[in-house]
Amino acid sequence: MTTKELREKRAKLVADARGYYDTAIAEASTEAQRKEAEEKFDAAMAEADQLKAKIDRADRLDDSEKALAVRRESRAARENRSVSDVASEEALETEAFVAYCKYGMAGIADHLRPIALKRFGPVKAAQSTVPAEGGYTVPQDFMYQLETAMLAFGGMRSVASVIRTDSGALMPYPTSNDTVNEGAIIAENTQVTEQDVAFGAVNLGAFMYTSKLVRVSFQLLQDSAFDLPSWLAARLGERLARITNRHFTVGAGGGALPTGIITAATAGPVGSGSLAAVGAVSYDNLVDTEHSVDPAYRTNARWMFHDNTLRDLKKLKDDMGRPIWIPGLVDREPDRILGYGYTINQHMAAPAVNAKIIAFGALDKYLIRDVLGLQVLRLNERYADYLQVGFLAFLRADGNLIDAGTHPVKYFQATATA
Image 1 (cartoon, rainbow, N blue to C red):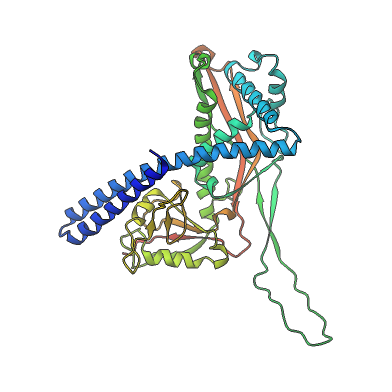
Image 2 (cartoon, helix red, strand yellow):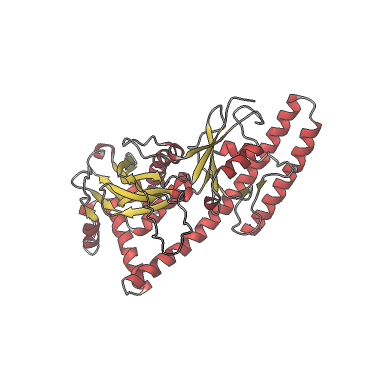
């Protein structure tokens, strides 16, 4: 089934579910009937979500192929080489990495050894706490697979701005707020007055993250049909994605953790008596949250919330009785709420009393800083008596919201008032 057919099927499913839900709720005379209508609607929306997941997977595969071609063309132009030469070199880099994973440095073929040695070694970064041996810096193909896994499970990396640095030294990111200053009218032959611009800085460090160990049996390593890079990318990438996404979302900051976007964001409206239910959100709350963010930041603004919050928002309507959740029906068109795209982040709080359940604004003002490349370490001896090899990945990263004082991101907090 093509993505076009999947979108059409999903659109019909959503329309049918909404028609049923509106009728069933209007005719419900008991709480049990209302609950039954809610459950059937939720089941239909879950099926629609499964179709959306299939569409997104197909789009990601297409995007990854295009991104790979673009990246190779860019590298070829930068290094004044042909695309085929770059592709051949990257294929050798991947082959060397697979050999390292399967056999260790001692088992790498002679023609691959210079490539492997070039990518294996100590981490050259100031203030590093990495073991002296370092790890194997993964090739581009593997890194892309791992980043795809991190994006799929991360949430924050799909909306934030990401930069990579070669050093782990403290990096001050400058900010300035000149919004309170204006020009002026002056008389003839009058000296112009001065008005300095106040500068600040958001400091980004480099926290050490590890995927923890993943053990692989000798039998799997020796199986030529086993796609070890993809398997490792999924396992290591998902683990790193979960912990970093949690910290990039709700990290407490203060030098002990990255500062999460919810921690750094500014309070928007607080839930009031117009709530549909305790700890939930109403149409009015969403409108108030939207307009609590300055229009300058609403051009490319997005919502971000837990999947349970999306479930509730799919049932909301505006004052004219129109659903606020609109599914994307054409190719590459995203689903929207009040005209804005949204991102599901499972480390956001689910609907609950006093929970900060929605973020809105210029989410790309959150900056993630990665140091060097991700590195993978193969442990040969630790589990040798189990006929297993251990793998772990480590990554140095930090994150914070770049806010010059104009509050590009606001959060909505539900309350206990019904």
